[in-house]
Image (cartoon, rainbow, N blue to C red; front, side, top):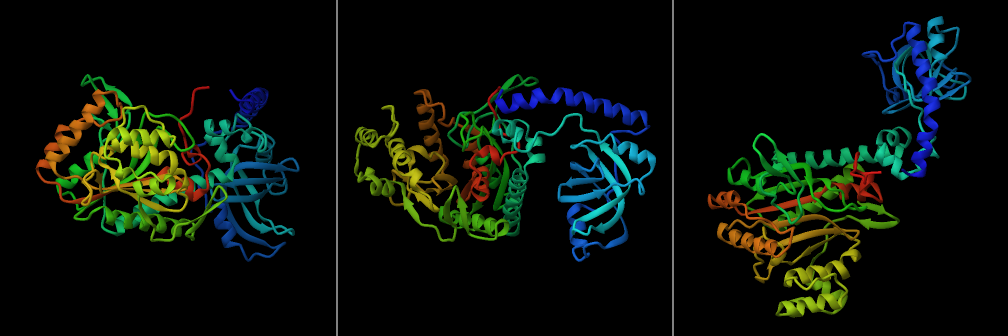
Length: 497
């Protein structure tokens, strides 16, 4: 338990006891502290817009009903700041306007309680839009006090473990998650407007395929079989393309990978994955630029963003650079000129890459890229020319059989998107899977297993197509200037206390 959380918990018990007593007092007055509903007429932001022209000191005969959480009380409850999801409205409570029963309930209110108010709109002489309360309705008696804004919620661990408190106390956290929703909505709207059909594929897989990753394992009791939480929807989406459900398909949903925690990794994450028939990976490059820039323009109204103090220009087109060329530019080593596995491994090791000695040529090139290039790719760039060894689902490069038609898009040193000219030759696909199985037998836990049914589907004919995956969590991090993936996921995975 962190110091902030320990302080938060130590302080709450005596105050909770007092609040439980106030709940009992409300019930003794015949007031239900948890009623079933309250019919609002306006949200706080609606009132602000409607009465924007109301002069200071002016009163109206307009009766409204508002509801929200009490965030501040002044002058023994005469003035209350009531917050709803849209903003704040001030409530004025005076004995000349309230019944004795309402005044009695007022004395039993605390900061954090949810309250419904009916009253008349006015603007105070100081210019504060206010509702003169004529009736009060307790909507939920809070039995625990809110943490102090600059005490309990300064603790990052407390914010993640008690996200509901973080959202109550920190408008920045609310705005980040709301912006995430708008980002996802903008991507979905753009794809639907361009003829893409949204689909859903299984979360439980009999075979963990579609990406190189270690899966989570679960067990189905009725069938008495192990199943895997999906690591990618790719193979099921391409089955739908084989079946002719549509020529443009997409899914926005969760994937699960049994990997460690870091500021950029959460075991449960959200991705956009899409496929379009009759195009190759170059069309996916254009679509990646289109999606990211449309989202930025829609949500941020600019293509020039700032992340961690670094300016990033999202204006397309983005440069296209091969992995080997980037490594050679950074180190002087041309991996394409290394004609055997041993020399590639030695070169990668000499460049400081983390190698074990069992890597193939493609893995050695990838390790060198990760060690010497990846972090330097700050401005948007499409990295092409991925090795065939590490890309079992992509078509062979038309110019070099060691490579495939695949790219990853990098921004701020992070992989944001991954795309292929999709492999649709069933015999080639089987050979790739068999090579993966050999790697798996040699100890590579992330190598992809052979999916016989998927190969069978390819034998019925998958049209030439481009496929694209975009990591939504990382994209949201960039577009909200969030330092950790846990900031953009409402309920991130955390280590046990």
